[in-house]
Length: 298
Image 1 (cartoon, one colour):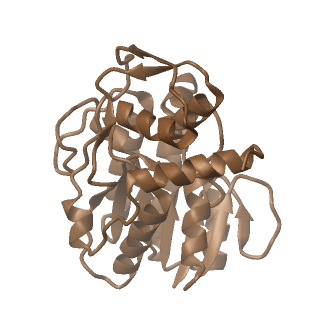
Image 2 (cartoon, one colour; image 1 turned 90 degrees about the vertical axis):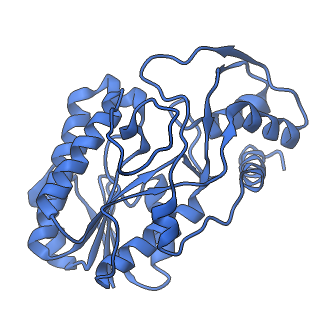
Image 3 (tube, one colour; image 1 turned 135 degrees about the vertical axis):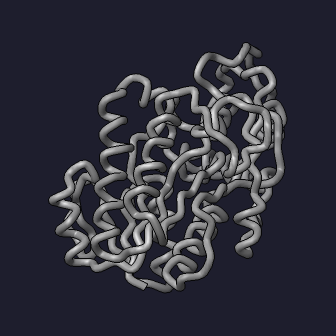
């Protein structure tokens, strides 16, 4: 297959590209400056630049991973988020339609909103933050424009040990840093997640893209996640074991515009023949080991 990955240099794109390149020709697009064969510097908000990439690559399938990330960042930069997530998605979907390319559009589980109920792809979505809302709008735009041969992926708590360090990143990475350094942090009362390792997640995305190209049945919307739920306090205990030290944290109520529980319904992705292989305990061990190596302590 000829594959185009938009947002290729991001946390997810890097791992997806590495997997797909083992079997297919993969072209990459990102906003970062670069000059190498198969890489194109373009912004999804600039349809003209992106159209030139489509003309050169002629992709069978496009993975659109580009967009504004982070709930906090999206609230602080609402107009930029709207343009990136919605206008950018419109550009990609339109070019896919013109080129006849299948499209895997990366969204977010934040579209569901703050609910403790099972995150069923068929349920009505009520996002409670700008990040979730703009992604829900993008989903509608993509499905309206592309109409067919498109799948919207809603990931639920993806992580990898080489994720960049920062307070804007997931609780997995922040908890690792806080506990290792002995820094006090806040733990939201009643919060729980199902954590899915990136290596498993990109295999699911590769499977979806292949099925679209082969014209096999693929649901319009698919959750990707892990079936095992863990309270955040249990995740903290895993890191305490890894670092052999007690965590210092304060339990607080959930702030506004956040989601307490993420419990995905995974029957659709399971029906396509995918199952995650990395359990949370193993994943936490990999994250802790990588963190120690990163800072020269192993």
